[in-house]
Length: 480
Image (cartoon, rainbow, N blue to C red; front, side):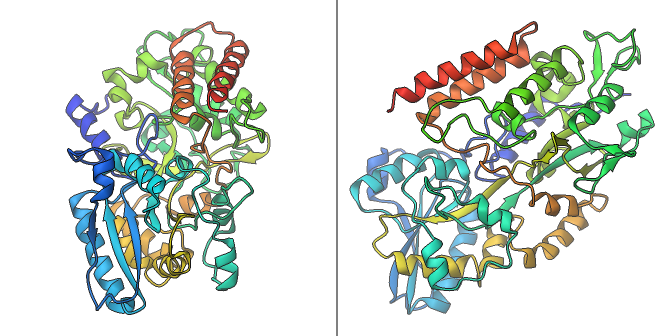
């Protein structure tokens, strides 16, 4: 059962590729990517002198500033494509709206935008930006619903669940529209399934597996068969040695504790009043994952994950993990594995395929909100194909997906790409990257909790979950 194991250099390259995959898709903590070297000046100085670019046409119309940097868009090759996009846009509409880019490198983009908002000299349109970026400026985004209604903007080309996905304001305001999506599915190693004589997981969402409901408990059953020690015993055998495992059945790689739990159901650590809570579905999910590691042994613990055996974190890419639930951007990182994708199992009757997605928002403080909406509606409408090409993204618009799938099929001819399209009907609402009070400190607490349960046997998980809630409450209270 020899498998190709990535070298350290290869693993570092993997991470570099992932940083550019999407605004919220970096591994481990799933934070916005730090794309390039930060400028030498302070955030305040950079805010005063961003690189502004407007090209094409007479550009005599209302100036609309487009802020780029919170997510993708700051790499040199992207900037060149963005300039070409602006030139094309202004050549067509410059006499009405003059689109101007404010380009800020990701490493300073958050501080620069905060400074601009505080000064009142802010851009109009911001993006592409992921959920975490939107959450970092909670309350700053314009509700697009009145503009959508007033302009009779056609939403029929979007999956209705994706419209709901961006109803993120405190009162359900529509602060974004679908643009680029990175759905998740269950990636599986066909070779390992074939060796075990197991049927592949179902590709149809909600379908059965071998005549039985496709649930996380059913996944656990086959994951144990796919977990093998150095003597060839699988995890169902009384002779199985959990200290000498060479192949695992399941690992939810490159996602934090919130992401791991979200595959069992969407939730939040924050209730409607801003207090810390532990959703019941997440309590069950954490216990399931803990048992998978320390009791059933079909999910690797932290020591295994960080070992050369499992490619120092790229566990599925090592060829020694049979299943992982992960996003479309992972196409960068499973070279050498014969993989395909299937539906995420259900849990207690519900299916959740957590979603990474990028959008564009308009700031409430925009000096020209009507013009900003007009430009944004064109960017995400008439110019959507051009904008998708700029970022090499998978489109949220259904009418553009067939062409994107055809391109993906050329590169990966043996993959059932329809599985990802169908996953868009099962997004996590609320999203696993949604904001929390005192966000960075709260996220550190969640990360510590995740590190604890993946590295420590014999925990009382209910007690540890209660401790996390208490810790988060203290962190939330600091900013009340």
